[in-house]
Length: 340
Image (cartoon, rainbow, N blue to C red; front, top):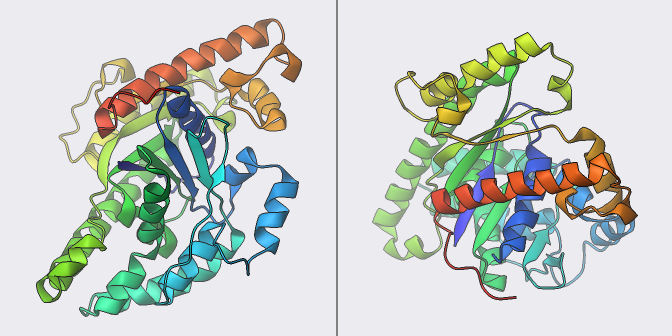
């Protein structure tokens, strides 16, 4: 089982729609996929579920089983026993599940920050609390014998994302072709390196005192797997020359800030090994997909995908299938998919 976090502290780079489509594509390829929405805005959850379903999840916070990320993480962050989880099945073939997001998760920001500070002093209880979100992810994966867990994170360098990234085997960065996305990679890379190092020290100290904790305390590998160059709605208004200019900056910027490599990567994204995909802005089709609660490549004429839109939806499917195959190989969950 592999855990992949989609992370960028820059908003509006197409991250959430990327997670949504990647999850469906991996499920279509036969993998068992769990999606966890750790963005307090819960935008990914809104893509999957109707408003009526969201209301029932959030209203029934006192149910025996935790049904959102906040309901599952809160007791662990406060040092209490874990609650039983109920994942939301998203397809009839038992390939895709969701642990929905919850705006209440934002209330744990200060708690997780305090626990992180306390864990630096070698307090075992604080280390376990700091790993609350990672423990939730492992609980989700074990419940359905998942091949891969995809985690959506909000655009922040705060305590919630730091805690969530402790679950990450791999980190994928969606990058837009604009000045803020390029220069933001430096801050993102610094944060990842710092959090990885600080957690390694905490974990080493904890295991020296309690070796048995290795079974429950996450490694926090956070290995960079690469980036996806996106052309989201905000970039579509850029002049073509400006877009091309910033696109050529991405390989070296990523290599320097996150890949830990010499910034001599080729300016051509198609020749950059760190670039896992270049994905178009399917903005017109995305509106139809949101209304149908489907990925673009599942749209049919009945959903409004007519004429050129229908063929564009099929091309989108080819793009995401190629991306999913590369991602599977890079992240190590490329085992033979299970028969439906």
